Length: 259
Ligand SMILES: [Zn+2]
Image 1 (cartoon, rainbow, N blue to C red):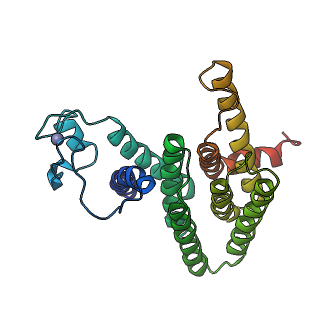
Image 2 (cartoon, rainbow, N blue to C red):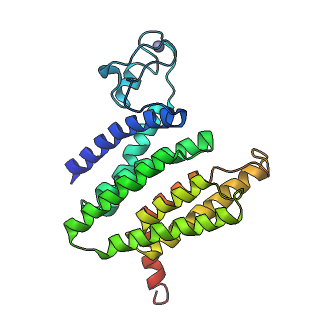
Image 3 (cartoon, protein in one colour):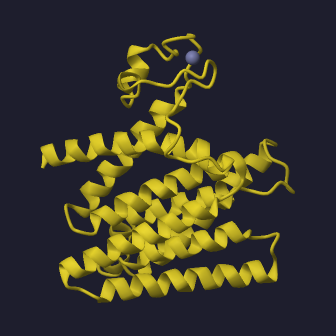
């Protein structure tokens, strides 16, 4: 078990390193495959030995090997955060076939949240990749576990969440952007596999978080009242919260009258 978790952590770091590329390039319409990463200051391509997650950043003392321009701590932080998210996912779900779908969707939600926080957009290609890869992972898990019920629930709840957001967007495009509508489909898909309780916890957690954080930012005058909020950040956070903690919360709820 410890070896398997170590493996998940290392893979999480490597994928986290790729997420740094995704978060920088996708909103700018650049390819995530080519060219290879380069120093933003001197444009020297980053060699393999300088591209090891976290370790290279520490060994280089947060500076480019060639021009000594500082490298932001954000890069290793994103790598570590993704690895932590993957380990939490593995601890929570265990080594079940559905773990692949959970880890992939976790990373795509993390990347979308970072992009939304920075650019106030949710690039549609990335959401579609999220939907496609998560659905594929869920189909594989369904075939492997010979259970069709969770897959059907996931598809229905993905379509349902999309529809609810679509109607809100239709009624008031200013209140909810279409990026959030597409993202709603992905959230419903991921949470629906586990059940309606998880979907509801994810939905409410997102909005409670949005109101708390958004309200605090307005009250402390760090955000104007008429300024749009990056709702995708809260939706992604609420979904991860539900994925990790909803079963514990829901079992408390079920046992509540007796205890
Ligand atoms: Zn440089």
